[in-house]
Length: 281
Ligand SMILES: *[C@@H]1O[C@H](CO)[C@@H](O)[C@H](O)[C@H]1NC(C)=O
Ligand SMILES: *[C@@H]1O[C@H](CO)[C@@H](O)[C@H](O)[C@H]1NC(C)=O
Image (cartoon, rainbow, N blue to C red; front, side, top):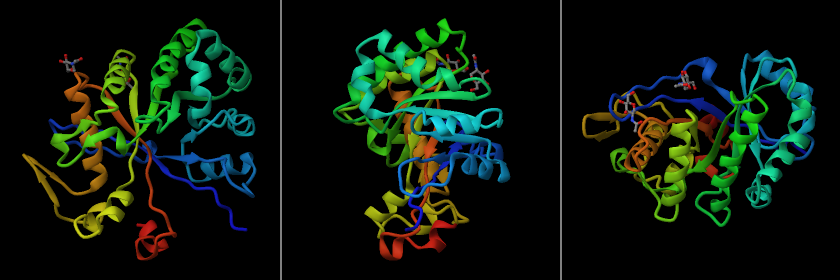
């Protein structure tokens, strides 16, 4: 059976609505290491692959012990996730968060460059959405107490956290997400952290191939496709990022940066839309 784990890209983007800067450096690209799947390669092999390709950032979805051990001393900076199913228990108390960290992270921390603790993956909007912010608030208290305040706290939201994203200057959080997102981005601003988004131009293209141009979704157009006031957009990912910047500005937090924590294009599964050629663009 083919290895069925998937990888996606982490991009650090700087795209501001006021002066349209798109900054993407090779050192800012990381790869998600998903540990759900069959026949996965050993963690040490995966970490060696990162080193071989000079990938210096990794997103881990949970504190996978083998992965954390393999990362030791490797100079790879890590975004470490807290899995969604633990959020209700962790939101209940500071002690629960402390205990989670002591058990799952602390034993492996030596020699690891932990940059971010990401509370939940794509839970806002959704039934677990209200558990995210309490956990986010407990984490710095615990980290400061251990002199680990360099570890930033964040969460990962999907495109559906936005109620409107087109054009980017009309970006706004979804009605069911706006209250919690307002608190979260204020927290991110006050802790100098970033908002992580999973942004898939692929899904936008797939849902509306007649109107979303393929070259716009795939970064291959040489001309600007969407004109939004003074700004011309050459690719859909940029537009999604700026929609989030607009939405944050509207709730009073214009200075929080956006990090794309997942993107990518499937290489199969949806006929003509998902070929290895398109995925390799
Ligand atoms: C905020 O974080 C960025 C890097 O993420 C850093 O360059 C900057 O100096 C920080 N600002 C403050 C005020 O700590
Ligand atoms: C955002 O950053 C600008 C420039 O550093 C600053 O003047 C402004 O007060 C900041 N806004 C907020 C809400 O922090």
